[in-house]
Image (cartoon, rainbow, N blue to C red; front, side, top):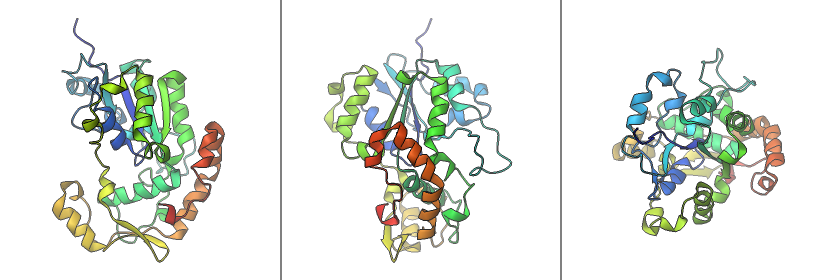
Length: 295
């Protein structure tokens, strides 16, 4: 009987909350394998069960590793009963946590890293522009149902979906606002949770974390709005220098206005209070009403 090559460590999200940095830092451990493609999006597919062999082939040589990592931040976006912020008719999506459990088993470790939902939504908005899905005139407040920009930020519902599928000791939740300030400390906590020796990581490798593609955007807060520095000029430079931006439309990029952050803060008011109750220390780092200057 061959070695089990199924992934047993999932970074489930959230999108635009530091998953790229977290994944590459964890993959620097000699006992953790991650395929070259970070986001496989396997369990996000409605017919994932038809592609199991292709999925596992990505891990074919990783059977001797203690952990095989699938870092797909889209896995956190689960279906919710509240449909105010999803497109209608809603596309049928698989029950991602249940799908993960059915193929990978109930001992799979689930890592979740989160960011203030209003600020994450702004980052997601700029990401959608990078993907060529937005035009100059678009504003967050006019796109409440599009692309999960808003819906993904209702973290408590998405986490609850995972708690229905996995026991609490299989799930760890972290917050980007803290992780970014002390990565080594939180890396050690994660390695201890995984039963790995944190000192086995070569310090030279642990510092080579990849940046999220949005990190190359130069966003400025000017005259009360968030905007691309140099506007179309920045767009042209990015498209010329980096293939990750090839889908981005060569137009003046959209901006984020005060009305957008007010819309987000209002939409998330109850959610933030609920997250404060679930994670009491969160009140110290997640304001009820962040401003555009906080981005």
